[in-house]
Image (cartoon, rainbow, N blue to C red):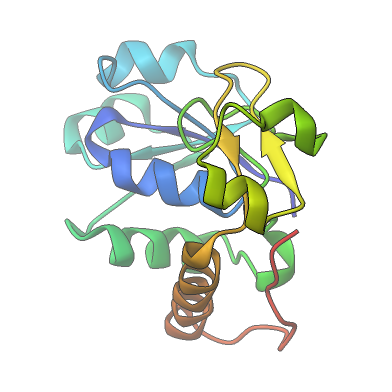
Length: 165
């Protein structure tokens, strides 16, 4: 399933987690409300916590998020859109700017990452937009464990494993 999101400015942590899972999730901390959603591409699912926006837009592609807690918000999205583990592509988008990250040659990041990281990792990715560099650090396994727990909490799945790309 390919789905893209327009995420209201009150749901910043949800936008970050959608990006971690590999979903295209536009988010602008300074923008929100009707203008933000009206400017969003028509193929995006609109995510809001603002009742007045939900009432005024009445879009079939809008999901009203009930929870205040980011973990529960993500579970709401997974359940309502029937997103399954095989639909996610973890660690393929920049969490800062939403662009797809690209593999880069190790020597190209030599002076851009800590020495220990450079010496202990062989694969690096970089955002072509903001330049942020990514590698599979110790956090990756913790994030993947959290993702598995989210899918367990969201309900039945295909039983397929979620693994980072």
